[in-house]
Length: 305
Image (cartoon, rainbow, N blue to C red):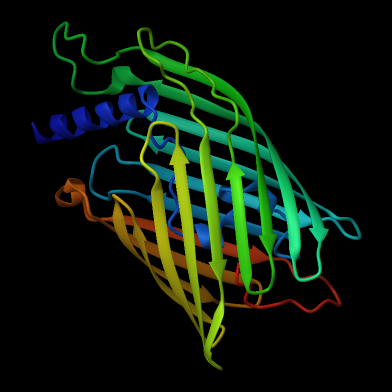
């Protein structure tokens, strides 16, 4: 009975995500170190070829809970004011799988104190739900969908990003088209536009300590505005230690190690503040970031953004 209850809840979460104006885009606790996942204008800001892989397991111990993986690659183009990149995503909740693939272009304009970039991403999301796999249907109960749902949804997004060595601010709409999900008769299932506003600043506390507060504001039509407040402490230019508060959702702790000048490894743990906290053991997020060093050029380590 407990298993059936969990899968019933998962089924409801899937249907709510499809048929209401809820948060549909994948969630990231380490957004401040994974900028391309929310803003195409971030491409090229690392100054070298950069690769980031991230895996997130949400609500561990809760069967059918969200599982997310992303991989991004981006680089500035030598002697030109442009940057190129690619973002690949996989997001699963219950019996629903969604894959995304986007090519990214950014134009970077150097200003007196920093760089202003505008970015564009073009690609698609491939969506598949196998509602017939849900172990909750009894007899002729029509409360749950039993058919498979597939959709191929092309889309594009845009963003702006400004940064100096100590400050950044970005605004983006990763998905501009409001595609309909076919096959769900009697519903209003479609993608909704998500707006992201992010900013952060690095300040010196001592020769060995730096503090970087960050903020991320997320909004989507018909849903409450979500605010993520974060503060990271950089120790001896080697270790980031941080805490975050996500409104209506969670408290998080973060740890990132600059293992080598090119390689950094990050981890985040979320403690849920909602009633679901008794049904799971929290959420885990692992990130690996690698920057390719250019020959005969000094690499700034660590990158603050």
